[in-house]
Image 1 (tube, protein in one colour):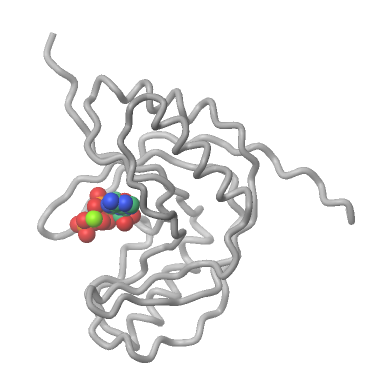
Image 2 (cartoon, protein in one colour; image 1 turned 180 degrees about the vertical axis):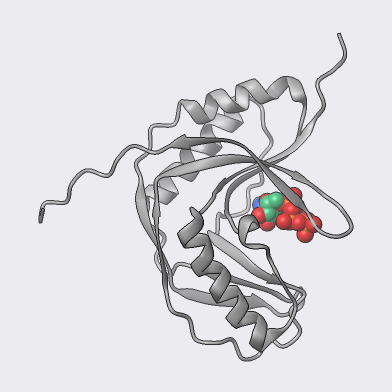
Length: 184
Ligand code: ATP
Ligand code: MG
């Protein structure tokens, strides 16, 4: 039987259309000040775990890990704009990492390692890349924070090309509903 094609995979939070629009607006404002190449609205995402190239035969096990995650939904407040001057990367991030986000990443890492995925040991730093190859990152514009109600997470495939990576969503999994707060 022919081998299933390998794929370059990553888990990510993928915003709905409304949040993506607000993030794209932040990217446009940053672009007006810093130049560079804004990511396309539909490509905006927050990477949770990068798997790299995975043999096609392992895809079912990767999906099973995701299906077994029992983490809760949460609210993310993207309230920081930052840059890496040398790479010209501009991104938005949260000043405080919500505990359910850390739990989700831990659960994914644990599950993926248990099926033999070699993940990076690098500390997880949640961020949404907005611009690449920005030239004038000395003065970033002020940021209107973007509130994101995170209800699910996704597995995506990345195809690299000279013109930039193309992402394809493979599947989404819902997070468990947030328990009502005591105040409600
Ligand atoms: P390009 O590599 O062409 O600049 P890209 O980085 O968006 O594009 P990929 O390299 O396929 O495309 O990465 C997909 C996602 O995974 C991106 O969000 C990227 O930041 C993230 N990522 C890539 N490599 C790693 C890594 N080693 N550790 C953590 N996240 C990674
Ligand atoms: Mg890359």
